[in-house]
Length: 237
Image (cartoon, rainbow, N blue to C red; front, side):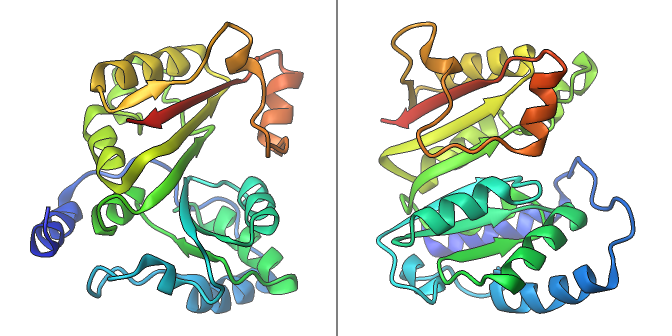
């Protein structure tokens, strides 16, 4: 897909439905100030041309780019970005309170290898150049547990097409969830798609946390409530 085609696709995204909360409790004045200044510094502007060189988006020199979709409060994203300064990270989170928490942390300890977007992740996926990402993380996405809402789940044939376009050969798609039906849903859709190869060799593999993993508050709550997390890894073939 050439640049003009991608711009056309991105423009058509304005009419696609977005599902999910954008606001929670009123954020504190300090968080609001950090959010405003942080988005000016770290926020992606999708209104311009597709970048010829994606690493140029970052203030630090980076050798590869990873995307995290729906980073919540940013615990995992911050941990990964701090531990991998040679990698550029793009984090997407439309939930204002989560973005405010991340921007508050960055106000205290800035990072030069991080950019963020505060709206629908599919807009970023449609804006990115072909084969530019070394990895995509979708960690504890909204499970939409009612069957009538399953069509709202982010893992879908259309979004897997988007993943396949922007991921390099050998790039990794990581999916974590504590909801069995969503884990099975993701396995089924990735196997049916054809561009992704599941990496598990035995039953224990997908219950072992990733190498660079930290337990977030959400995951700790899930474990306390008796839900066993699953960690799926797929390679872009």
